[in-house]
Length: 371
Image 1 (cartoon, rainbow, N blue to C red):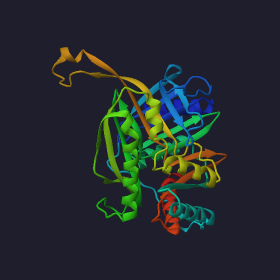
Image 2: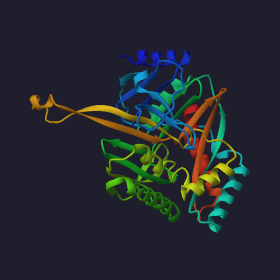
Image 3: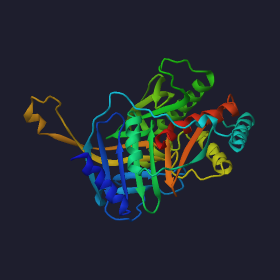
């Protein structure tokens, strides 16, 4: 299909106020678009459903799904640029101090020092006027800027329009095999990933790793954890450990919500950190730090990868796969404004002023697409 026809179909669906999502998986050479055929708002029940899901931060709220059986899929092969493109954004480093966020972070630090909490992830929303660019144009900019991220544009007339470029996998499954990651720590990218990490960032990443392993242990038969390494996400660097293995025959919903919300977006212990967030952030995160992606999609795979063996290639296996991503580095487009969501992990070693500056850098990363 020609790219012009592909994006024209998305634009037509959007103008008709019909639900859709278009996305590219990390380092993929193709785009996928799912078009729901009517404007009904469908929600997930037991997570045995098949389709594209969008779930909020608060797991008490419903997860939305574009059901496979009520949607059409289109794909487009694309050319990946050899270099990731970055735009210079307005100087948000001169953003006026938000004393409310600094006070919130300090309250979080004080609570950690006097309570059982080890970590709290605290966030804020930055409102930026949007130019006349269409959401599709913003999505195309994100594709160029974030090659290694899950990049998406999601719309439902009864919910709103979201787009983003997230570096974090919540859970990926193929049959009973799974992959997830422990992602934490932040510093600016300065032309190299060969950097030193301070104790605060290393400890934070280890806390996240330990938590994920502990939560998964009741659900797995095998579990492997890689050493942490530095990864690049736009103009930021993070520490990441890969976690993989084999799941027990179990309820996928239990596995998903043993992880969500992760310590990278909520804190530790999870229940206490989430309670602190809901009582003290004083705004609704909605789908920021929720998750989204493909749920229970059936895919065929050749049993034999040797192309010369044509006879055996006729036999394929059908496997059920899910690929879910944490909704970080995202924005909501609403009333000609972009609501850019940013946050950071708070530990006993945090400094409120430095945490504010980290959110400013993260704002700059996402806001660059709006220039």
